[in-house]
Length: 366
Figure 1 (spheres, helix red, strand yellow):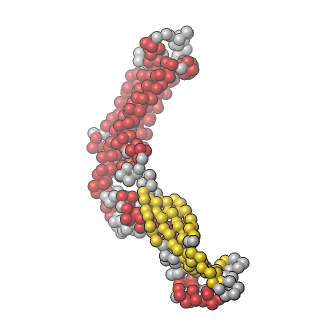
Figure 2 (cartoon, helix red, strand yellow; figure 1 turned 120 degrees about the vertical axis):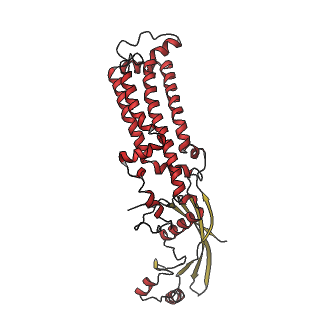
Figure 3 (cartoon, one colour; figure 1 turned 60 degrees about the vertical axis):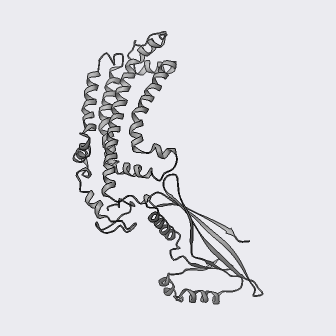
């Protein structure tokens, strides 16, 4: 079943408005026919065409550089199986990175747009353009930290001599002086630079293409619902009313001495008529009062009032609603006592308007 590009809700008939958010689905149906949406190799070719197929060209280049480096002076001293493993992982990793970025192209668009409503420094790091720039830099930083560790840590050096370098390559005692130590670890660092930079450059170039593709989608498709505060709040309110069975806003409960005697919701006339109760809310209320005995309590939950809404750090919505609750208790001498309580509901929803949790609290009037 197709999924709405605006709210991620399912719709049955293409071309008709989405039943969840009311968005027009026809532009999304037309977009799904584009060559970039075909999937597989044809989709990747159309996806990378605007950047002259750069991520695809990096795949054979990675394999060629790896084969040329096997047994060369740059990698001399590394075990043969380690060299083959590094070349194989880099050559297979580049197409996997490209394929993963292509499959996540819609998610990358959402992350780029979510950055407008998210809060905190983590939201800045989630921006695709920031990741495209930081990935090669972080790769270089990681290689530098490994270099520092191999020079300063005797344990790491022993590990490299045992599992990475050829037997007899490491000399005892360890060489003194920074230049000699760097020369000893040079083959391993060169292999790491080959592996890390080829993968990171493939990822960054693929991510830049995905960002360009996302901007094209923004020009031709409606924006996601988390950028429309009014529509998002409407969907969250409607979902909360349904989950709490308060869609009509009123509820009447009768609680007896020994337990719950019955519960009726205003607006549900079909269930009332099937049980023989009056269909009109006032008539049902009178029937309940006539049937009540001493000591019973009537609770009248008023219509909800939505008093505040705010964005959560992840771009979702936090809303609060309250309703006044009147409790009437009849004593043995026929007197009635009333107590008033304010019921407060706090609704937490994700950026797509799906409810995560509903908190209930009460505040009694003095």
